[in-house]
Length: 202
Image 1 (cartoon, rainbow, N blue to C red):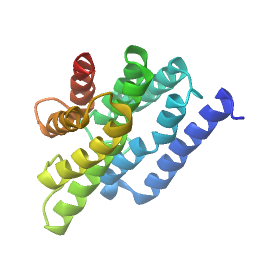
Image 2 (cartoon, rainbow, N blue to C red; image 1 turned 45 degrees about the vertical axis):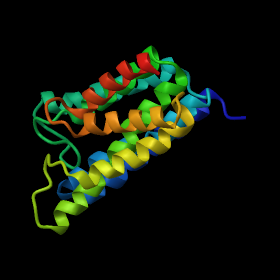
Image 3 (cartoon, one colour; image 1 turned 90 degrees about the vertical axis):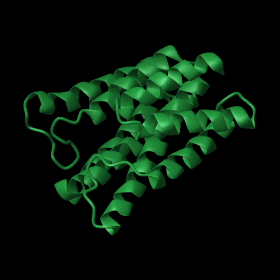
Image 4 (cartoon, rainbow, N blue to C red; image 1 turned 90 degrees about the horizontal axis):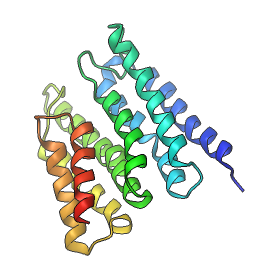
């Protein structure tokens, strides 16, 4: 039977492997690497859902990762294979992931964390390849093709985890998709905030 220490070790191993793997890609793949690293926390999210990683440990570890990622920005020495100057998205992601398990019930927190990691990751990868294929600069660009990927994966996440009828699940996925697409506030802050508000309705 896997205990908490073993679960945390496995979760950290996935993240460290992703960091090492993406580092080999280099800075030219930064916009893909920025999506692959958050995807690597899916095992941690699932083990949190299964009760193998307590909310406090998940939250504390995510907070530490947020501080570790913030430090290079403050020093103006970004880890250039996945960090972008003046873009704190990965820091916001870690701090948001730290807060969510502490303020939301496990099932709903899991749905929101998976949307942040999986749906956003899929969206970014789709957009990256769309813009590269068409010869455009991928930096900070949004496109409807990525939003389709976001909606599809968010709906798949909502089906087992969001307590609502199918219309409610679809509404949850649509609202998060629109929240991710908007350009006024970083989606790593906007999605958790809107998703947290939606919990009051669900």
